[in-house]
Length: 229
Image: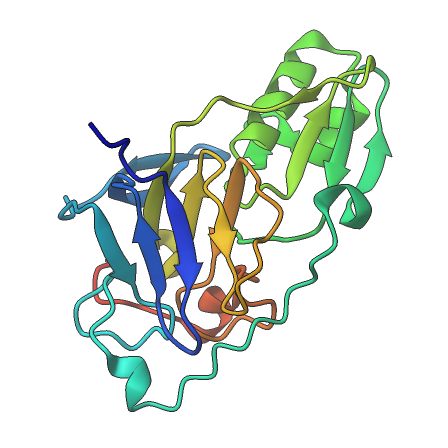
């Protein structure tokens, strides 16, 4: 028996994300919970071994590609740095916890916790409860921007199975990015592979200045795939 294809995402030139390897696909809704946020289940989506996800933001069948990129002049040129997370990230030192931050924000807001945001909580991490909240806020960051680091150098990462979540943001009346989890390799349109990371957020509005990654332009442009409400 042949092994099943491994999960992989391939970016087609000026076209969609081609996903292979039977990666589970779901819709999630960013939902306020006091001063924090939850990621709740959205509408069910069809599953397939291989599928193409829209990258231009104009499909009539979201989140799937319907070929609209062929007629709307979509420029999907990838502009993101190929430097590693290690090279891009700054580090903030706290009393009992440190924080790596590469500033790739998808405006998911899971870094906001009931006692404060992650940066404030790291500064006050000598309080065990605030340290715990800082860790939760960092590991729930879907873009992978934030990584909590113990004082012994251990980076704290959740264990995710490969999955893609199509995010909706009703609070901001817009549709958000694609949350990719579980270390799925991302192949550029030029055939090279980006650094494999446990968490990334991919642009699906078509307007990010940091393609293929989300730069929260979907919020400022009010991108809506018709399912954000």
